[in-house]
Length: 293
Image 1: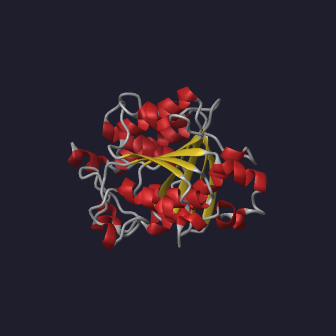
Image 2: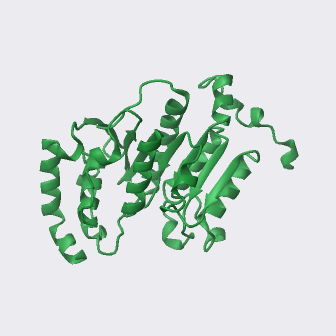
Image 3: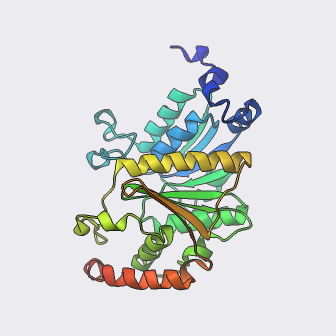
């Protein structure tokens, strides 16, 4: 089919009903930045493109490889060795030829952060779990610029959501990373993202969590759950519709255990409940931390 025959209104007409025509037109004019085009980032991008969002900034320095196959929507035999941002850009244009896509094939860093966030209406975090410096920098810049930022973590077979909105608690105020060692940042991120810890009881191979090698187990179900949640948050934030949970409020839904928990941790990781969880986490991962040092 020729792109000349493509019709935006026809392509996204089935969104109408859950959004109005004027809201669909508004989504067409929105720009979303996504850092990471792998496990959750790629399926976030596809979801938001199918919502009809018209402009994207996509950052990732990696290429697709076979270990990505269990969860990453852009990972196929035909894409192995290809840059993730190149495949991502091609996919967006295959959904919406009129979309504007700017790629950042070196990932995000201090040198391109301003360009990455320029004109952005929403930042969606999809960085690798261990990308501490980049994540800390981009959330700090979003807070300074008043850009809403959201993250949905794929944990086990669940999704944990946190939104960092202008005028509310910032990422740094919640997680309190500062200049702490990376392994402590990892623990604070893990505990802070999911205070409910719904996914922990069914981890059947604990040694699969390897801090030294910076890897852990993952599932495609969690990535798909995250995309549904992020797409919905994007609708609410971009169209200013409905209640949006902002940190220190959070949510985790676990499909394996059929449980939904909303959390509230005033003070973030300095909250007494979080401090207890961090202490327990340090004991649980003491051996892994020692091996990683």
